[in-house]
Image 1 (cartoon, rainbow, N blue to C red):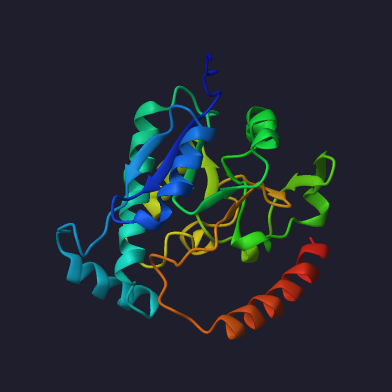
Image 2: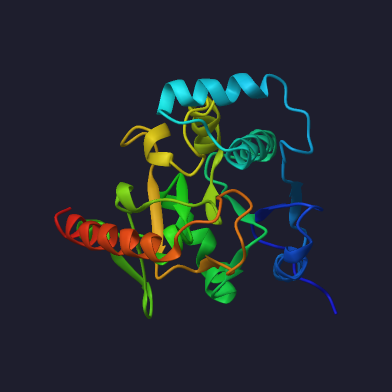
Length: 242
């Protein structure tokens, strides 16, 4: 059987130190032939120059020291963004970035609409904040059936398990994260409003598997759900006002 070439490039952040995610990684590799695997940087296993200084500087800039895993994800993401600058053929080409716990909700819809959706955006979220992302009402338009695309509410953008960027976005993100301060998915803190054209789809086409985080420590799940519920209600009304 001949496997059709992918119409867009895909990066997958994974690690040999994540055996529990092996099956998920294999599923993603099967869905995206030719996917580029990127080994995740684990500070506990990889020597990082000036690591202590990076943690201290993040505390001075953002009020708390970044966790080891958060710094590792920033450095891993920066490696991908640099590679995108080398490989991008033009300013419009988008590169999809996934993580080892990414879960494909509707891969057929993603592949069918990817190329035409990304034309209007520098950065597009195919999934974000565990499905709680909100689109601005004035920028919302139907994609197909139950799916809508448009500009997301900045407050509701988080997570890096399913986003795509072009060359301009890669360059901006590299410059913005040159001074590490916040977790990499705090895009609203690293980038100024209007600096990049943001887009998103709801409901999300890429989500996450229910597996333990390699970054966050164990948290009170009930309090986390309550907090997200409160923020979700706030963001719903904010999205209606824009």
